[in-house]
Length: 292
Length: 222
Image (cartoon, rainbow over all chains, first blue to last red; front, side, top):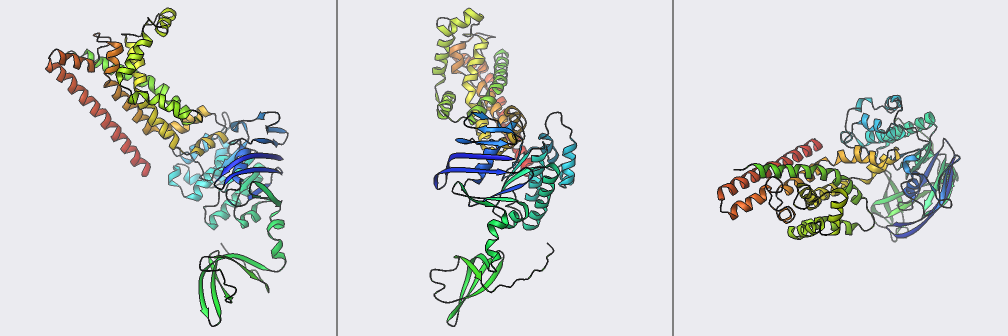
């Protein structure tokens, strides 16, 4: 169980912001931090890892206090049992994949775990490559494996899957679940991707303006509106064509273009490039399986 | 031609560079991570770049002289006399060439992504291990540049040496001073000999840096 309460004055692009977040995460679960960029998600991860100091607050991991501003207790980052996967992966450029993993091995530990992780993450064929010779997905696998070599209790992921295509994401999400179960990891990840949070997270905290505005399971937070029988999607107008008295509007939703009929009044203030919400009232969906 | 000044120059440059390397890397690391008063310390270390060597030499002469407190303290407690001695030349050269070693290394350390150090910390490594095994291997070209520039700069040193070392054969008469003396006594042959050797040595050294750094950049991009 991890419990924290952090208060810190942050300086974001929009000016100063007071971060004040209090939450807990159960051992062996995945917690997602969701919210607009600049809202303080990464800062929360960095304070858990000890890379940033809160102005006030505490951090308790099981029975141990890792930080407490009242008693002036503070553990150095290198003494905290965390794995951190950075947004830029932070692989050591001068070390091969195998050496990157070996570097993380605590003195005197058996290198068995390195072998095991390379097996599990399918890295054996890449063992002798340098990071610059790897694709984004491969680098991310190495970063993930490296973060787990010292068997940390907490794994922190800063939007690690953002830059990957969807099939690579799926693979890595599966890896993540497998790692969590094998090593009983408590995982906290920053993500902007709803499907990802639905698949991985037991708990999601919505971080806005330095506060946790809502938290709950992904279904509680994001699925409530879908249950009502409505379908809504966000998109961008890519084309508007006149068609008699009405207009045909092409809206890009994800990678699909949806055709919507609209009146002149509907389109007041809208133009090509405007972000819009599509709502369908009479909605009767059915599901077809896909092989990705 | 008397080879001794040239040998002394090479000795001085080698010792200075080796000691400077040991001092310069930690100093550059400290500066790169400094948050307060950074411009002040950077200015202090860069002073030898802009100060006339005679100014530096003058203050070192005063500091090293047994007539003043630092020099007399050294003399009394350690029986060390830095004025007009080879050891004094080494210390003066270190101060004189310090920015040439520190600046490239500091710039390279600052250009490395901060996440490398942070990754090392979250992997449970101490700052010393991170410096030695992660940061230094990734700034090798800068270390080579700093080393060579310090070496070449020390070989070319003149004003500071003349101020605190004088012109004692075998002890403080280095090649640059020997050239000056040869010209003063109208011995142009000897002056030309020393000058030519210095020219060739420094050219070869700097050429080597460009060659090695060019090669390592190619390996990097391959």
